[in-house]
Image (cartoon, rainbow over all chains, first blue to last red; front, side, top):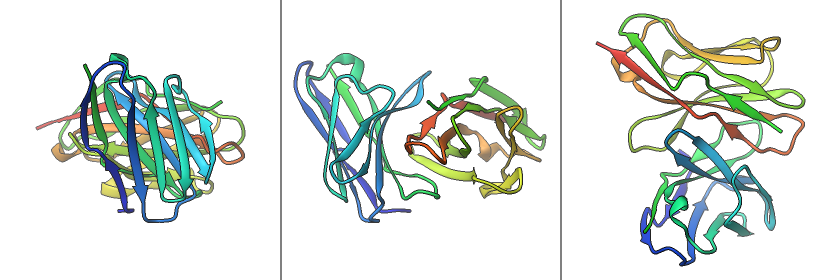
Length: 111
Length: 114
């Protein structure tokens, strides 16, 4: 497995608070992605990055921002968490022409 | 923009029977297609991919998939199902000439009945 870690693995937070999830990779892959997984919706792309400081929106980007200041780290921020953002969040890396490698996921609950 | 449809939320198959999990896609340009599997409380594991070449692609755990350009489909198949194949299966697509967005379907839950 590619070395992808996500932190925290579990988080409970209150509505209206900012939350940052971290994805860290040790494989030097160019591309990184954030997805959320919800029953009945599968995996939906939130944001992705195609290089340091290069990011773009996915299917469900409203209420989320990202940053990538180093190749190995991709941060997802919920600017003001809402209950609709309760989900499992997966980070993935990709080097092009290969498959994606997924992290273990972060379970976020917004109360 | 890319999209993926997995028309079946759930597929039930008896152990030993062949299985098919359906996937259709829409993409500008040439597709790059994937199948992943997710076991309970786990992340996604790669099964197989199609870029170019033979339309029948072989992957992990005895799975294979058939690319059909005219029908824009990439169905996952296995000749003889095992109970241990029970899991959630995802199809994904990106475009070889596009922006490297990788879009997933909603997933199909496969139940293999003993």
